[in-house]
Length: 306
Image 1 (cartoon, rainbow, N blue to C red):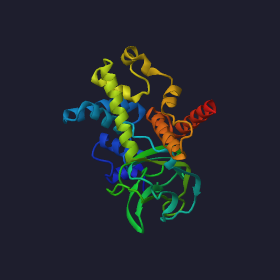
Image 2: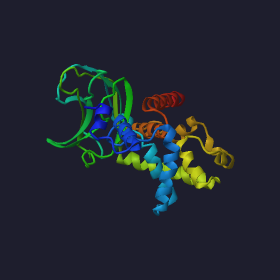
Image 3: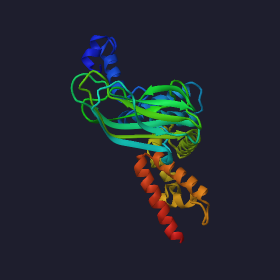
Image 4: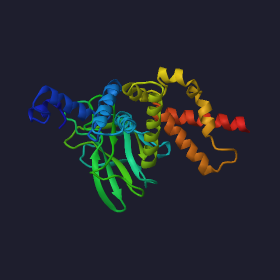
C-alpha cells in the first residue's frame, strides 16, 4: 500500500512531523537519490562546498564536488533511452520490461531518469518502476527508481549512482521494468520515461570544467561562495566579466574554436558532438534542447565551411 495515512498508522513515516514530511518527499522523488530542486540548489551547493572544504578538500575540488551534488553531470546524448504511452490495466505483481539500456559501451558514473506517470487515481498505490543490473546471464541487483506511482499525473526524477551497491560497467545492461500491482482495480499509466547515463570519462571532464570555472571566478575577484554559486549559471559573474570581457565570447565562437578541422573523420566529429552536448547540459539546458542546439550549430558551421 502507498496511502500516506495507512503508512503513518503503521509508523513507516517516522516519529515526528519533520520526519514524516521528509519520508513522503523521498517517496515522491524516488528512492535512488533525487537531487535538489532549483529553489534549493544554491543553499545546498554552498552547504556542500563548506562541508568539503572543512574536511580538507582543496577549494576548486570542493566546488566541483558540490556542483555535482546539485547538478549531476549531463547524460551523454547518444546513451539516452525513452519510452512512453504505457497504459496497463493488468492488476498483477509481475514486472514488465519498459526499456533496456545497453550493453553499455563504457563504465558508468551515474544514471539519470525522469518519468511522467500516475496510477488509477484511487485506492492503494502499488505501481513502481525499478532498474535491474544484468552482467552477462547474471542479475546483479535492482533499485527502485521513483517510489510509488502518484494519484495524479506528475513528474519525478532520480539519480542512480549504483544498483544494489554495484557500479554498472562496460558490457553490462540496465533494464527498466514496471509493476502495476495486484489485488484488483490497479492501473499504471506512463506517459513518458527517459533515462540517460553519464560515463566515468564525461563525469571527469565535467569536474575539470567546474574546477577551471571556479578558479577563473576567484582570479576575477569573486569570493569563494560567489565563485561556487556562479557555477549554477552558464554566465560569468559580473566581476569576472569586467576583468576578462574576452571570456564572454558568443557561444558560436566557442563552438568554432573546438570544431574539428575540415575533413575530420566521423569518429572525431562524433567526439566533438558529445563534448558540445555535455557543455550545453552543464550550462543548464535540458537534454533535448542541448541536442537540438548542438545539431543546429554543427550544421551552421558545416554550411559556412562548405
